Amino acid sequence: MKKRIVIIGLFLLAFITGCSRSTGETEVPTQNSQPEIQLKADAKLGLVLTDKTGRTLYFFANDSNGSNTCTGGCEAVWPIFNVENLTAQALGKDLDIEDFKTTTTVSGKKQITYKGYPLYYFAPNGGAQEAPGETKGEGAGNVWFVAKPDYTIMLANAQLVGNNGKNYTSNYTEGTGRTSYFTNSKGLTLYTFTNDRKNKNNWTLADFSNDNVWPIYEEDKIVVPSSLDKSLFGSITVHGKKQLTYKGWPLYYFGGDNKERGSNKGVTVPNNRPPGSVWPVAVKDVALAVD
Image 1: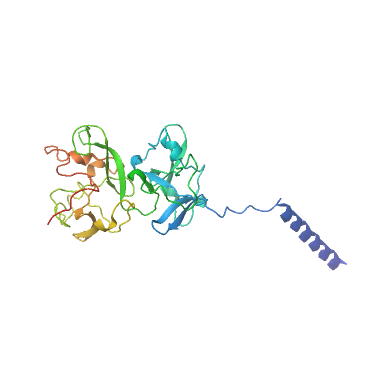
Image 2: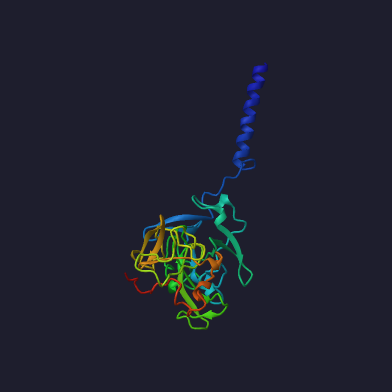
């Protein structure tokens, strides 16, 4: 009799459990199979950040200091990307939550940033966003680029402000106006040294005792926006360390920028020489370095 009661009880328990699962009342919800932000492989551009639907996300070169500068009519063509309360569990494979932050636009909207860059969509057709998988915004105006996790060179489009606090144009005369120049992946300005020669660093001492003033850009991987010619980049060995080069010019940081993204104070160093004559920012159209 007892055995029969146990069997009946087990049957009832299984029935009740099955019913509750079918109605969803006790089922634990599963995590969304599509992360809010993920990496997608593009045949031409490599790994690209997208949203959960596969729509491409973009960087704006004017945002080199980490602030959203896409205002007015720009907002309609380049809508901001945001996810409320983004968590590590909402990210795709090989993405680190530490690289993502939130900023506030001038209009008071929240926007997700990646490695300091605010993220955007591209909506070229009257506000309709481009379809998942499309990358038509890449290189637009030479200031819009797909968001990638592995850039070693990025472009900034910003005002030059010397160590003396004065504004300079791209030809290093006093005045206002944006200059397009190279940065690393986190918006730190890169410079060239006019006393260097083709693939030869004439600044760094063997013991690196002056490296804190003009640190070498210690990198040998080359991942650049599609508007730049990858073949013009290379690397050299400087006292056992790799330094990235462009057109034969070794690339440096300026210690006085204090690792502050968007800072380009080095253009007026040394102060007894004309701005940009010794340590200009690294630019796309610089002449080839000579032997």
